[in-house]
Image 1 (tube, rainbow, N blue to C red):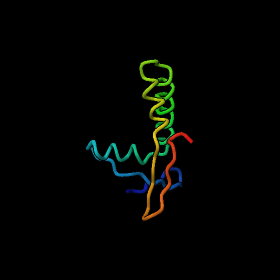
Image 2 (image 1 turned 90 degrees about the vertical axis):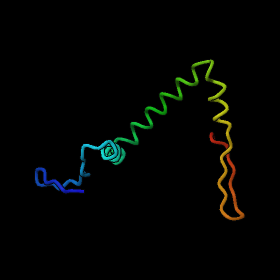
Image 3 (image 1 turned 30 degrees about the horizontal axis):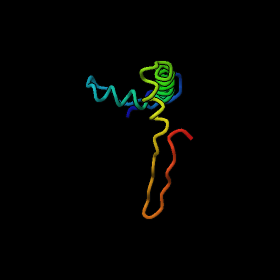
Length: 81
């Protein structure tokens, strides 16, 4: 990380070299990545719900049960609560 001084404010930016790995890491650490991921996920969910050929897969995914177990204790819930 290097610090840049812009208009009296210090900003921390990752060192970006020309490698694909560095560009991917910079993208992942960017603030808007989570929002972009949510928008794309919502759009894909809407598309999957409205295409009749894919709808059974979408409904099956929503009925999938996720289980988290630690030692002897566990929680088992459907993906869609």
